[in-house]
Image 1 (cartoon, rainbow, N blue to C red):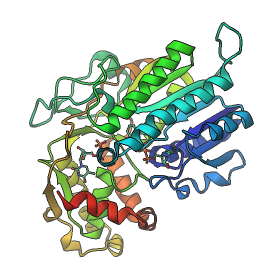
Image 2 (image 1 turned 120 degrees about the horizontal axis):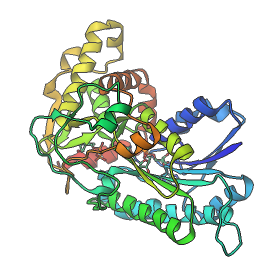
Image 3 (image 1 turned 180 degrees about the horizontal axis):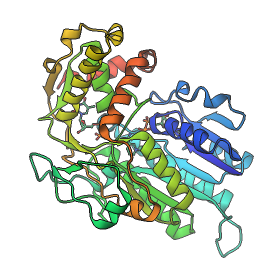
Length: 397
Ligand code: NAD
Ligand code: TYD
């Protein structure tokens, strides 16, 4: 019997992870406790069918609330803590850094303390009960920004160790010679990434100081179903469907390494089961692309779907002829905008056999279809204060 405490399980990656664990391990003896404060980014609809299962329990609460968290550890014999709960959007962190420090750093510390109390054996040896693990879900953004060394992407050459693991991904490319590895020094450059780096350091410190069984995973940009439409990919899909302007920051040449969310969930599952205690694992998509190309690809894929499958045209909220690159609008750059992120996932690939299986072509098509088919979800999550946030964000750009 394994009992998971999944924090932030109503958000984008957390809800995909809950679905993944139910699908992959639901038939085994598992129990899933979801703790989520249901901020603007959390929505119970994301896990609606999972919440009907007898072994899934939802608790609305803040990871930083020591009483709530202690109560969960008192009621359930938690084996794995998977900490997704966070404020996760860089632009919001630029407008309100404090909230990011409170949730991402102090919240993580409260969770760590509760786990330490519940799992620590009270002998002076400081041992922990068997099979326990605290997994901190972190980001490649803690490493800072890489240079973009090529204007046009070059073929990505894998070393022999990686080639053996990654058989199925073809035509991989990169915008530079350098990549983030687990040994890259932390050098965060936004309030969001600084808060995530702070949390990572605390998790590492709890391992060193109290012997806590931990792992940290640092992942590149995710995309897929249930992502709140403030991040690049879902925002651009939403705006194309609605015939609205597509705000591209600066020149649109900044590079991100995109990973399909299900591949991320699989990586976390592997690290929970097989990751060496105390280790950091980087998780990347082998999928570097500059923002402007992502935006153009979204426009062109939506247009292609509409032309090939006319039944989809009734889902458009604008005229078909409006779906064009004329929607692109270059706006003032994000302050401190990181140029390029790129992960070297050799460690997780060679130690745990994981690699990003989903090609971008496949992943982006299924993501676009999901947003076309789930506009009611988009309407629901963007009701309330969203429009004000969006208007404020872009009014000065
Ligand atoms: P998200 O913003 O979609 O979801 C965050 C969830 O946490 C929401 O359900 C929200 O209600 C909940 N939450 C926020 N504050 C809380 C609090 N104080 N207590 C309890 N719950 C709280 O985020 P996401 O994109 O799913 O990211 C999940 C995690 O993965 C984050 O830690 C993020 O830093 C990390 N990450 C995200 C990406 C990405 O591309 N989205 C990439 C790498 C790492
Ligand atoms: P985002 O999805 O916010 O993720 P992150 O900043 O954590 O990487 O942004 C991805 C990239 O897209 C980033 O370089 C900023 C850029 N971007 C835009 O150009 N326009 C937008 O409206 C948004 C939200 C992001």
